[in-house]
Image 1: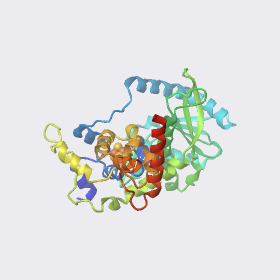
Image 2 (image 1 turned 60 degrees about the vertical axis):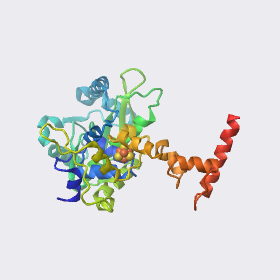
Image 3 (image 1 turned 90 degrees about the horizontal axis):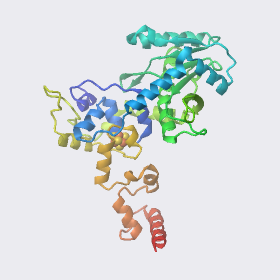
Image 4 (image 1 turned 90 degrees about the vertical axis):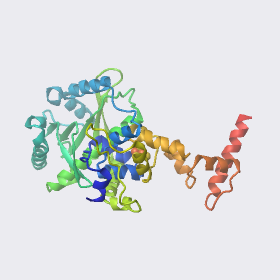
Length: 365
Ligand code: SF4
């Protein structure tokens, strides 16, 4: 049994989907998450067993709204999408072919997508929308299957990922966190399609880093499209995936018998106590940030842990980075109030904290 199998315990590895992979790019500094994902640990089940279930998950209303909007964009062979792309990219094409990859059945979808992409990459004069394609990506020795909304081919001889989201764009603006999450998810698809192109012997750069984001406009259901550049998300994701293939570095210094096993008893309940599991997780450093609350199943557990040790992580990445070298809130307060003597290398941050404290007191007076 290798170290990752031992970490996961005698249960099947959890498959990665695009949302899980996108979340990797949301918190690249967290060793706990990288290790749990590399081992295929069920993070949702772990958080529940610990008594800290994640607070997110779409409501049934949001899921239904999303499905209705996606159907609207795709109806009549993606006619609405064609209109949007003509406007957005000046597409000089009247007719675009439409292929629903789902017609072959789920077990053949990945290989059928592969054949269609290969054909499209060779026949430069064809323009096609591929609906329900299936791509794959190797993640730390496991194959993750991914389902982009649509692939569009032949916009200047390139492939574009089309991501359909049901959050609204109001007066040309959408919520930045939602756009960022959509960009991270689309970057996963770009990476997977580039890997497929390379595998087929085509230039992976023919997959554009500009993804097409389609959302409802204002308060109606009328779709609008914009291009989102995902190069930054791609770079972070690539670094994270390399990190997961080098898990030996993350495992260094951890006890060989360490496990996050959720092995169930006859009634499907994990045999291990929550306390023991929490202790095991505590051996692997986490890097909690408020963003975790919308991206990682372990967020409530890690937030509680960060709170218990008075970590500055709770204040967000920007504050944590500005407080570089000061990891605890109590230490930061002591430096600000002058009750702690700054250690070596802390003089500058201590000066800034004292100044901030003085200004605060003046304001309060
Ligand atoms: S919630 Fe915890 S495990 Fe997940 S990314 Fe944040 S710190 Fe890491």
